[in-house]
Length: 159
Image (spheres, rainbow, N blue to C red):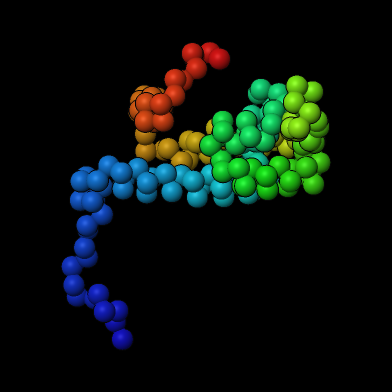
């Protein structure tokens, strides 16, 4: 028995919706890229959240879970789980913060640095796949526009 839609013209409402609702378009594009990023990160054995934590720790040095949470815009309870997972795997360690004995600083280990280095090798190829429909100039433009929406100033070129 043919599907119920057989014989009816296929609707093409989504393009109209995207044209009318920038918020919906951005949400759907973001979800698609997020799914692809999580798949890529999972193949690297890391997951996006853990990847971002290691990347920030390597870039800025030891910091508190609160700072990681705020800077990476990851919910605090999720950050606790990410750091727990990374610590159990030996990729980070928590140490008393010398400036605030009530707090702990999260520090990346050599194992975490190695894992991040391996995972980072696949990022350029992933970005090329995820944004294949955009030219390099369009990618730069999108980066600038998203920075405006997120109220962040991009770092100077060459940094």
